[in-house]
Length: 236
Ligand code: SAH
Image 1 (cartoon, protein in one colour):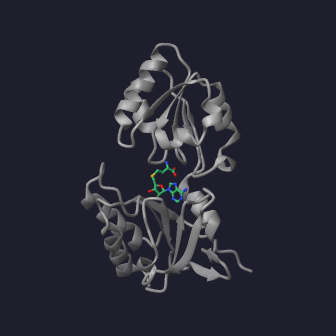
Image 2 (image 1 turned 90 degrees about the vertical axis):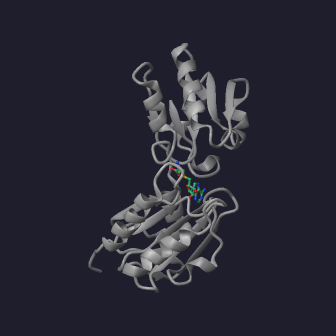
Image 3 (image 1 turned 135 degrees about the vertical axis):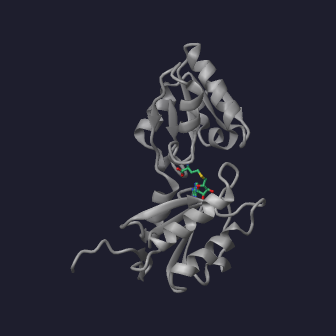
């Protein structure tokens, strides 16, 4: 099983994810995620791996499952969105059945915090070029901005790529007005959530790091009181 833990604390786990972890004999995941659920994994076999150890984590999980164990591979947010689901299916190669249990993805959590920015067509783009060529990311940013999508950015900034967010913002400004609302949510649903609603021309004044999701509005998005709102199109 590949289990999504949601974006933050226990309140944002689904009931299905909780049950899956409780039923597992072995829990596999990145240290930080396992540390979030000490009570759930107590007494179980655990395989904790470092952040970049996805391939190794997947191989170990598949080996354990092939040996007859019930294995839960935990992943933050939704495991099928930049998570572990894909690599588990690839490594399993049909040898063991894989069940994917969805979770609340960071885009949903950030949107809920901001109000209703994703009421219309949106695109999610990760600025991480670890597994995707930077040219591909640039092309997707251009196309999504040209298409007037609301754009959700994951992995917006890391030490290795501090300026990707600046480049992304500059591409947005080619197609979107400087006053376009931008919502920035850090540590959504983790108890220290920070949320800011700003504009495209001022967004770089806000602290943005790897624990942040950035939502850039479309041409209809506006600020309504404390909320960021993309109207669905109803006539009121
Ligand atoms: N599988 C995860 C996404 C992994 S990519 C999911 O479905 O949510 C990691 C990126 O997700 C981070 O760089 C950040 O942009 C975003 N993210 C994950 N958790 C977050 C949180 N609690 N608050 C804000 N952004 C978050």
